[in-house]
Every structure is written in structure tokens, then in C-alpha cells.
Length: 547
Image 1: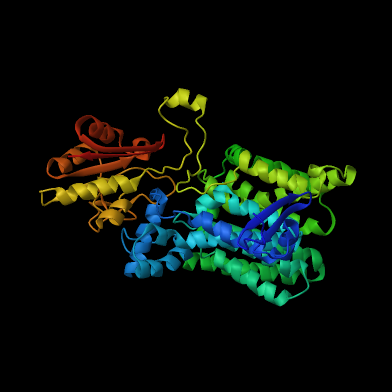
Image 2: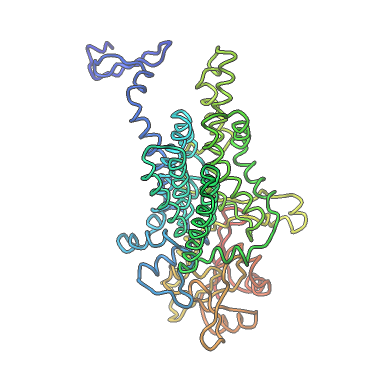
């Protein structure tokens, strides 16, 4: 049908230069020309709309997992205006908790409310990565770095959790951006210095890990001034000591005690193979391209590249040799460095190939980067289709480890994500239908008792590496769980006594099998009535038993 006869017809003609579009009888425009004339619109779509959609897609559908339960429980207490007291602590919740508590008061207790702030800052991180890459390198690298950050599995996954990780990543890279601007650019130096100082200060109020980022950036600034102003080195040293003392004082009055713990509580270890293994598994193309960038990049880009690399290596060394437990998520804040440097490596390699051959699509300046985008989605960690559930980090099932501990047990390092929502939905229904006036609920994670039942109930006591375990009532007789205030059950005899004189339910997950009392767990499995079971993966299982 001719377009003149039907002005609403959309005709697309394919020509050698691109797509020719005729819309409502308007003048034709080549696809490439359309993109060129609407760069700002495409940038807005790339850097804002896409990451927001992926981070907010079905954000409330995924069940809370263990650490989210701690966050949600503490935020609820903040929203209630509760004071810090025995068993009801905000332990290291930081800025995230205080930003979210008013939202809970306004919108109610819903999963999307608790995850709203992390999703917002996870989306804004893409903007920061774009701005940093553009400032240090150029627009091409900025576009692609932002693109990879927007679609990165781990950046999306951790932006959807009711935790502080995406906030820390945002302010860390914002601080890096303005530290670079204030040191290496002459324009607006005062403004950039103020913003960098504010960003660095805020790191201390997000999480105790932020203090390490403060130290890394402070050391970089200190070395910069010593190198560029050697005549004033004693003034620089004295000012640095004063600022360091101020940071220590803030650490003490805020109650995080990161510096104190780092000095007195850190133990030397060797976890580098764990972190390198995780990095190679999920970021290997970016890691290799980052190494290539180090070799090829010269001139004015070197300072910015060195700052980004320094930040990544600093975190890797700290976590690999001094952190008490292996937690891959703590390296999340540094992984954007590989996304940026890997992009630099792609373009440097592309420039070399283009300068030598200059023929064929894949040797054009954009050819190799576009090929790498396809590779990113097909082989690497790119998320093409948004998900409503993201499996968090864990090690692969290691055959040697399985041969030692049994074929039904996964490796040591995993993030349990059982469906607590389903388990407590069942418990709530059964409690509602029960004719018994008094029912109790015993949980291996009593923060979920508080969240779903508004009553901490009883705690099926277990160890929890890296966290305070329990405290005592004033008479030092009754043990209670540190976070929810649930009454602890210790020992098989005590357990039998409590379930023998009450009716109720026991809910525990796979993690409890390794951390709880083996005698109690075995007794439950052998003698009580299982009413619910759900399995997502080998380490994300949850059971409910009735007694």
C-alpha cells in the first residue's frame, strides 16, 4: 500500500547505510542520523531508564533472606521510634536504615519499601560510572562502562536487596569521581573538593566497611600532596594526622568501632584464592582486558586509570589477608573498576586493530566493542531478560569437598535464600485456624518471627560467624537472641521440655543443620511432624515442623 494513500502507514526500507523510516508521510531519516540527532534521548534511556527498570522489576516478589531479615527487623524498630536496648539493636544499619524507616512509616511494611533505597542508589551508580568514565577517558568509554554496569548481574542483584551495599558503592564511586576532579582538574576545584569531602564523610555513615574506603582515598590524596608539594610535607603530615584522628573519633562516637576492630580484631589469613576464583569466574573477560589496558594506556589517562586500579587492588588485598570471613559481596563495591578498565581495554585493542587493518566491520572503531557486548550477554554476566529472583553468590559444588562431607552438602561459601515468605504464610494460616489459645513458634532465624508474626518467639540457637551471638537478661539466667530478643532454646533436654508443654511450630533452614545443635535437629527430624518443605537450591531449603 502506498504511504500517500495511508498516512498512518509505517514503511521501513533497508538500505546499505541503515534503516530508512517513513512515518506519517514525514521526510525520511536514516537510522544513524536519527541516533546522532537524539544523543541525549538515547543517553537518558541507556543510563537511567534501563537500570531503573531492571533493578525495580518485581522487586517485592523475592522472599527475604537471612541478612535482609536483620535489616527489616531493625528498620521496623526505627520506624516505631524504639530506642537501642537489649535484644533490639540497629547494629551497623547506618544511613540505609535511617533513610528507609520514614518510608516504612509512610507506605507500610512491604518488601518493595525496604528495597526501594538500595534500588534507587543502584540505579544512580550507573550515572556515576558514566560521569567518571567520561571525565577520565571519553564518551565512548563512558557509554559502554555505564552499559555494562546497567546490565551487570551482580550490580542488579545486590541493588535489589534490603541491604546497604548499593549505597556504599554509589558514594564510593561518587567520592572517586570528585577526588579525581579536585586533584587533576583546575576548573571548579573548590566545589569538587567540597563534594568529594562530603562523599568521603558519608561513607563512614553507611557501613563500617566504608571506613576502609575512606582510608584508601585518604592515602591517595596524602601521597598526591606529598608528591606535588614537597616543601610543605610537614604541614601535610600534621593535617593528615589531625584528619585521621577525627575519623577515629567519628568511628568511636558512631559506635561502629571499625578502626578499633581492624587494629585489635583483624587476623591474618589467606583468602586470596577465594576472591580470585570468584572474580575469574564472573569477571574474567573484564579482568584480562583490564590487564591489557594497563599495558596500552599512556599519557593523560594514566592517573585516572591508576586511581581506579588502586581502589580495586586495595580492597582485594584487605579482604584477602585481613578480613575475618570470606564474603564476596564486600568486594562488590570495587567491581565497577573492572567494568571500567575492561571497557578501556576493549577500545585500546580496537584502536590497534583498526589502525593496522581498516577493513571489515569488526575492525572498525565500534566493531570490537559491539562484539564484546554480544559476548557480555552470551558468555559473561550480562542480564538480557529481567528476573524476579537473583541467586546470590556461592561457590560451585567442589567434588573434593563433597567427597569429604557427603554428596548432599554444598561447599562452605554460599548465601542461603530459602523462601521464608512461604514458610511463614503457612504458619500464619495454621495459627489462625488453630483452636489452641497458646501457640509458640521456634525459629532458627527469629528476626522472621518478629517480621511475620510480630512476636520474636523462641530461638533455636545456632552459631553465626562474625555477629554477636546472644546476651543475657538482668538475672543472667535467660539467654536471648541479640537482634530480635527471642528466648533461646539450648540443649536437647530444654528443647523437649518446652515443646512438651506447648503447641506450635518449628521453622529452620539448611544453614541451621550446620550451625545448630545436631542433637536437637536430629530429634526434630525423627520425631516431629513435618508440615512444610521448600527447596530452591541445595543450600536454600526451609522446613516447618509441628509439635
